[in-house]
Length: 133
Length: 201
Image (tube, rainbow over all chains, first blue to last red; front, side):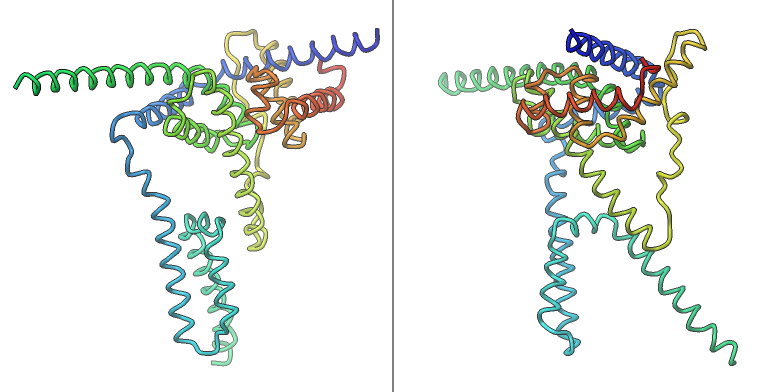
């Protein structure tokens, strides 16, 4: 009997949750619906002959970017003799991981972070010199 | 000469048939997306708490389904679509965790701190203001409680309750056994009822 009540209560709970969710779906604004429609049209364009063929080259672009990064690390290791081989190998391992490929998408952001850090370091480094100056 | 003409005619018929098949498939996929996209958006939005990002994830999932699985039978599309979407949501959440760690490292807080579920929730249309407010508050509470669930319980509950998938379809979408779906779903309902309390019902 208790189990039956519990099941009935669960069903009522799920029914209410479902109704609330449906209401929130019905309440989506026109702008959001329009964006969904545009997204749908973009997806359907995939079915057209030759549609979005360029997209298949995007992963290749990521691999090419990783290859360039590996070459840069390798060339630096040639120029700087004190860089040890295991260190270079681990840099390459990091660069070739899947997460690093994703990180390359945010390269601009990380460059900005890097520049920001350098600027702060410069200010801190110049500070005492100016005082002495 | 006649052989060439016959060959050309057969080729044209084949092309026409292929074109018609493409159009039919496009119309069918269009109906499927139109049917599923709004619920998918809300499910993604409840998971990641950002409508614009949720729109991107839903579009990505639609593009991947159209690109890779349009040839599959129509009844396989729903679990396939939600499987792609759930993977996209998980990837997004993983990337967000990494970004948050970077932000914390550089002394910036997470933008999620500013999230206001009341402001972000949509306005249900066509009801009296007090009823609308009650529903709105109930949905906000429900979304918050769902957000507290473990990921697999959350997926099982949303796919079963919001999308209306059966146990087999949910198992397919989640990439796990039907037994696991039943366990996750049952625990999710129990946990949500406990969190939201009797007054919510």
